[in-house]
Length: 230
Image 1 (cartoon, helix red, strand yellow):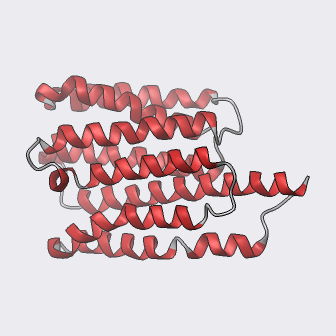
Image 2 (cartoon, one colour):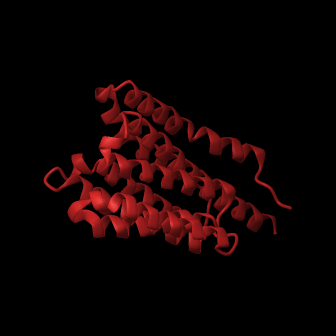
């Protein structure tokens, strides 16, 4: 069975190191409540992840999955900085819009370009998750109930379709789901959660985004190796 060459695998890891370092710095800044460091490090996360993707995309002829991945990362970046980029608009609704677009891109990516199997029956757990989230969070969302419910569908579909990819993509989808679930409680039910939620949201978020990007690249690079070995 064709495998990824060791040298190419090493390059894949190294290009993610800056993203990992900045992710750790950002989570630590949140944990220590150093907002002066937390704000700029947050806006640097997705650009560093995009750079890692681009550096690993050279010599890959399948440009569609890479383009969709970068598109999703770009809108995730807009979601991260919604309050900075569009300060004249309400932050939470704009976060839902930007991340909603990113999730739609991920769903397309997982179903059309990195799928290895059919949707497993266990994916039904994401339907149950959505129902539980709407039931618990819904009464506290006010005028955002419909928007939050729709976003929950898209988020659940992202995690569900991620189960069709390799194990790394699957884990990325799970961490992303966990991150947004914690964030939902932080935004709408802050009275029952503590200060731990901010670092927990970003820890699981950075893990999710990083694993998804890594897993997609690993899949595309492996397919490129298989193609060149024939």
